[in-house]
Length: 289
Image 1 (cartoon, rainbow, N blue to C red):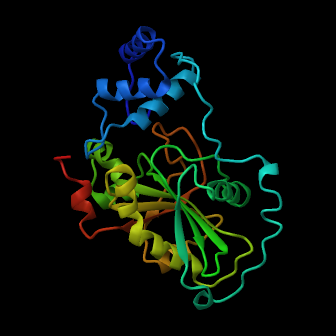
Image 2: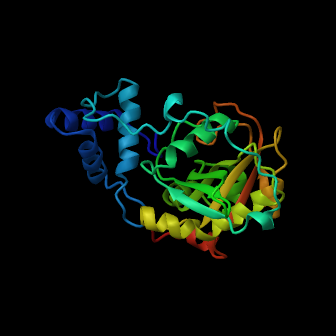
Image 3: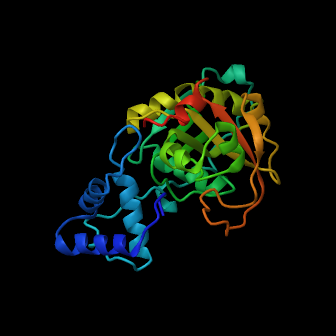
């Protein structure tokens, strides 16, 4: 769970920590847990968000009991009444790419005024839906020169393991466990359904990848060196990724991106990679953290 194998001793430690500090809020508990386990990224940053997610998962399974929330979590998906007519008012965009240029990418955070719109676009129009991000992530809303919304791009955690990617990097399981946070997963890409612009998808991919590592560094204190994505072969051909110079390195075996025990069956997908530095293998295989 969250990249860790938990024992009964770990659960006892967590229950004792919660019991000894009944007035601590959940954020404090996650910070103390990360400190106690020395749970850090390769750059030394405390992984309190991973600890928070771990505690919540254990709480939901009934293995620990967390204190009540002191405030409600941020609602990434607004109720329908909040954004009336968002999609029905959108006019078709059928210009050439040159007519729309320069396109702009706006980096969003959870409290950004445009984030509810971004979330609703994905929830309504992406075939996988959207219920909000988990862990480290970057969200971009693409617009044209006139300020019209064109696309949504979301990057988050990489898959725990996938054989074609791991072979290309040269990873063994121990190195992968240490360095996985230095890969970003391109988890959602949506050209809005009323936008019909040739070559737009590959153009936006190129714009985003030029800034992705710097944006990740600014937000989380560490860079990313490689980006991965999984293309459902039954739905898409991966044309925009090939046009943007991504490399297809193989196929999945029909398991979930976070399936560590080979039990969850999903459609076979093509695996695409994009290095953000020519030295990505060296950076991802370093043993000195």
